[in-house]
Image (cartoon, rainbow, N blue to C red; front, side, top):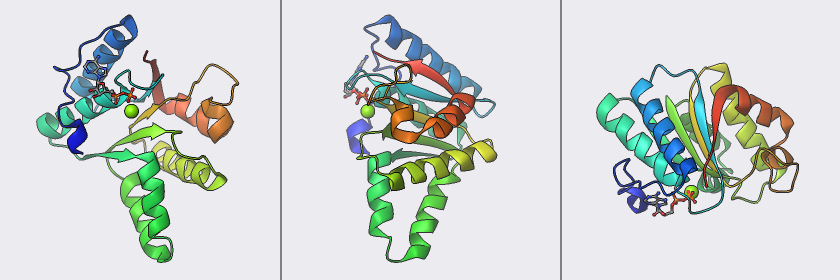
Length: 174
Ligand code: ADP
Ligand code: MG
């Protein structure tokens, strides 16, 4: 998306130790890719550069590694799936095309109204990627260390959360 075209590693200026560490770990992921055994979760408050880093990572991988990857805003994905819902076939195809991409960036998970249906979509994606050992990069404002309303597990359930723990390295950004 054009909003993010200037999101490069070079234009990311860390202001905090968290941001510095996140930048280093994202660069490291890029260098190792596709030989990575885990994806990443960038979590923390809004406006701290989570999407910036995820986009920079993807741009670099597309440019320098020539491998397929895709940036997907989770809320938009849900809307797109809903829009194609009457034609059941194509909503399945849409979801499948997202799930099977070699590197998937799922941006802003939890920004949507998390219905049971939204939970199912995320768990379907996560399970597919888990089963097929495909790395996923997630950004979210949800927390992972508290039992509060805005915690990942209270929104998406402990099952999906524990899958994500297995599949991704968690990186706090603030
Ligand atoms: P988040 O996804 O964490 O809510 P964004 O990545 O969308 O935040 O960042 C919001 C805006 O601030 C973007 O335009 C992004 O490029 C910019 N930004 C955030 N942190 C930095 C940083 N450390 N250096 C340069 N730009 C930044
Ligand atoms: Mg964001």
